[in-house]
Length: 288
Image (cartoon, rainbow, N blue to C red; front, side, top):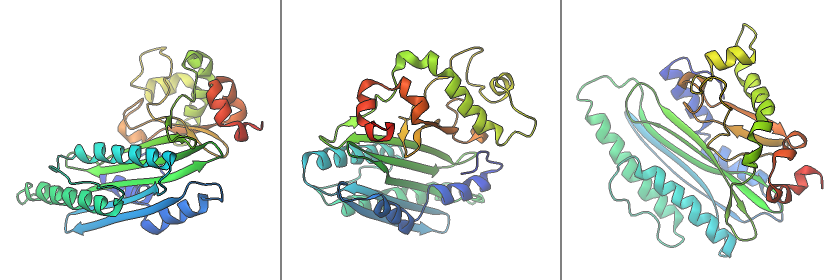
């Protein structure tokens, strides 16, 4: 995804490319990540469009009836409930039992109706950007002990520009409980050099003048007070094959046009900052 957004139209196109990955692309990704010891996953989708509005949902969710699958599915549905509720689309019937497709259809129809109402409220004003809501839930990582899902949400409900958020949720495969304690918070000070290095790499790719830490803090990290520690992202770290990815939301540490600052710290370098439980869960990636 491009790091800087130059216009609202460019943002819309970018979001369509990055978060609206398409049903087939999401399904292919999920299938490619599956292995013989993976949890069984099922794929659901819903799309609808009108002249100036559209919705696009893709939902990859465990389909088993074991404890882990049930707990993970319940958590992912809860996140969907929360996202849909923020659109004020009225009471949504949602899910009944394991009928995930019907539940997804109900969400899509209710949100599409709300988007059409918003367009109608424009009362003849030109709609330059279509009103939209995209919600993509898909698996991004799995090892013998955890499974990770990314939730990509993009929306335009009026205003200056679209909004987008990217969250990651990891679950232990033994019981399906969410795991968030990757980093030992007491080691934030010691992590500053790695966080600074990652952000310098991110912002430096778009800066033509040669970026150093001082200017990065002055011109990019505008949310932070002078000499404040760089915080960990609100989004839980994202396990990958190469290391832990840290991703900040729009406005979390910088301005909107800075996008979603993110970088990956290799496992060998992030290991000293991991909690004992995280080291146990990521033992395969840490080379144990």
